[in-house]
Length: 76
Image 1: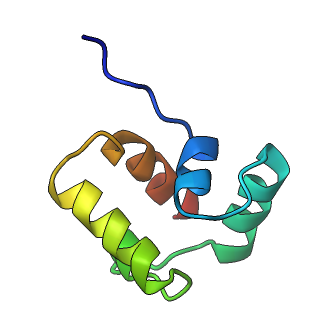
Image 2 (image 1 turned 30 degrees about the vertical axis):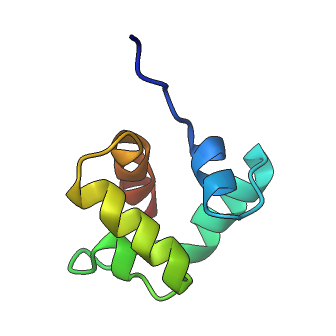
């Protein structure tokens, strides 16, 4: 069985954020740079539910972890 490949657009939709390419790029531009000492899920711009989702997916190295890492890198 092949694992589903998630994209940044899919991640933004999962987080309840506008998910078109322009919205994703605007979000990244508006929130970068994220301080190197701040874990992505601890960034102040997430809601509690978004924070919980990001933290759980990273800690469990779950299906979304790769694209969350990509977002993390783009925000640095």
